[in-house]
Length: 406
Ligand SMILES: Cc1cc2nc3c(=O)[nH]c(=O)nc-3n(C[C@H](O)[C@H](O)[C@H](O)COP(=O)(O)OP(=O)(O)OC[C@H]3O[C@@H](n4cnc5c(N)ncnc54)[C@H](O)[C@@H]3O)c2cc1C
Image 1 (cartoon, rainbow, N blue to C red):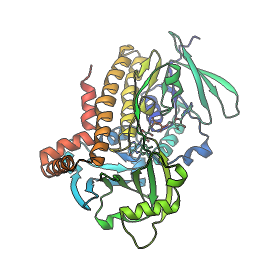
Image 2 (cartoon, rainbow, N blue to C red):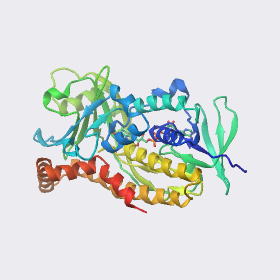
Image 3 (cartoon, helix red, strand yellow):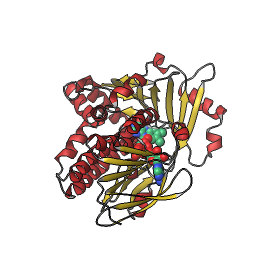
Image 4 (tube, rainbow, N blue to C red):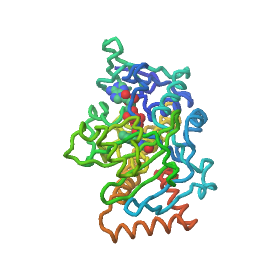
């Protein structure tokens, strides 16, 4: 295999692969983007991420994606912590405290599916991006000159494409990560999370667009998404011994929802899904010319909305470095710096913070719960503490910290 072609193979047209492809192409680098789903199945995926934090909005804006998302999104400057035991609001955080830190002092509630729909249109329109839908990466090899990716195309035929580097943005089940023999260190929680989509206006009960609800028995998260028709998504932890069918029976979900908010009629349930929650980080983010980004490099609980966000941060960090290398402005040490920066953030910020978020919501010890709630309240009421809290929650702090790592 010899290739002098300065082309990057990006595997996976999720939010990370698409942002990476767009940022590279806009930096003058050619990309082949491989996606296993066909066009007619692409938008059938289950709803997932959707809270896009200020640091990520700055990056979306850089590639012209932000303006495409706004008409399809809800602007959410505030979020709440609630105590389900007493039905009281513990703390309200307002991103207005970040008005001097970012042009985007709010979260944009825009689901993954809308992000990838808009970004895929942009990728298909870019002359430097070749989008290969219905094409699956099955393996790859590398040598000193480049990489060679084995694919199965939409007609079921085997194909090989070559390039300078291959980036796995394939999600948690990355073929590249397995081919590289990189361990995915961490653990999986025994309980799965049940996500129920409901057409009901929770705002009339005082909820914000984003709510974290603490409860030693059954904590939850409640988020609002723009329609039409508008939806609210509510997450509950589930009993590890109960099977999926029992958990997602309409009567079982109605009962769960009515325990959360007693209503004299049924909720209009529009959808549901059950998912396992992992906390894992790849031991290495780069082996030679094979590089991991997004969920292929790290996965975490969705409490705090950090998975997609931190993956998109990987994409922009990596695009900048790969473009410099391929333009001859930097050497491959830049890729080791990518690993140092983004792995540090994955471990010290994303993992630590999401594990803490879950603990905080499910805390059983009444004294610790009280202390946690008092701290949240104090932080939300003091402008300096609120700003500090929001810098972390908005991922602006982690983005700045990564830049300091040489
Ligand atoms: C219920 C839920 C809620 C969430 N909420 C949030 C949130 O609010 N905020 C947040 O930041 N994160 C959230 N997350 C996490 C977020 O969805 C992921 O972190 C994010 O989608 C990862 O993006 P990615 O591009 O790395 O991978 P993915 O989104 O998984 O995309 C991978 C792509 O690669 C393709 N692919 C896979 N294998 C191959 C192959 N072999 N060949 C070719 N193509 C392949 C797939 O079809 C897919 O299109 C949530 C997750 C869940 C489950």
